[in-house]
Length: 225
Image 1 (cartoon, rainbow, N blue to C red):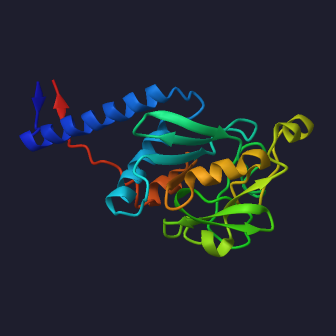
Image 2 (tube, rainbow, N blue to C red):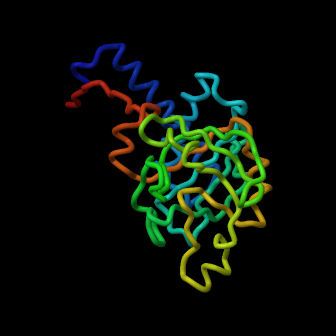
Image 3 (cartoon, one colour):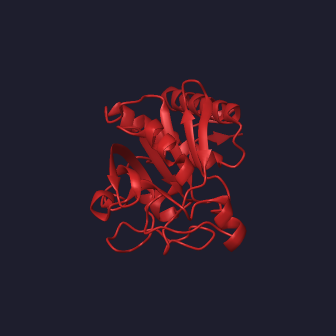
């Protein structure tokens, strides 16, 4: 028997459970055992808010970088939500002061040489010192909104490769950019350029507490007898 729960609370519980079940269903269909459920769930929450605010040009494509994984594993995943499939996955670098094999430390500060967490919207492409590159617009205040000023972009790098892993036991590190393998860089950029959602995840309590895009659902108080 449920005590102290109004009909509106019950409706909220039912609605929340329905959403949670839908997210779990999509996650299971994707069959990406490397990508944590928490990363996918949080990414979907922010994606929906960005979409509701008409900030995304593509209502199905999302890119998730899961920095809870070691740099020796694929940890960038491009997902087609409507068709519920993974389009592409890849190695991806983190900043040199973010960690060694594992990412641990994050920053929004200039010259920190650390990666930033949170939600980004992809912008236009350009030819820079690292070749074909993609600008990223960090949309979370005090978390990643300095990305443009810091020149945090997606680009290719020779140190992101299996060959580098075999030699050093990890991939190389950037100045904060999510750098990609040179032979996959253009393909990935062309898939996600021009106003799609990119989410960089790490199980950081500080990030989860301060992100305005993933405010936790307030569950009503219930008592079960």
